[in-house]
Image (cartoon, rainbow, N blue to C red; front, top):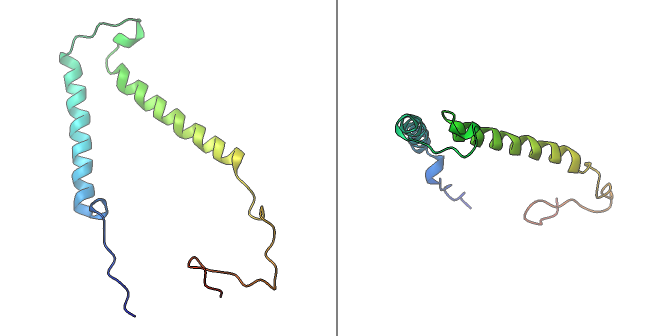
Length: 99
């Protein structure tokens, strides 16, 4: 039986990835340049700083990633959590076939 041709998603193509990176960088550049022309009405002293909201978003995202990493270390189970497999029990692959 021949292997079916693997279908690639649009995001798997190198040209699509390059296009997405370009769109990301252009969008970031437009928002930084727009920050120069937009007059903000700060409610607190710090939120009137240049690019405050981009810095806040970056710091918030970095904090979420670090928190998730710390939780992963704390909540991780050991490899033998479910016990050692019996020698009499045949192991099964992903499809459920005994090996």
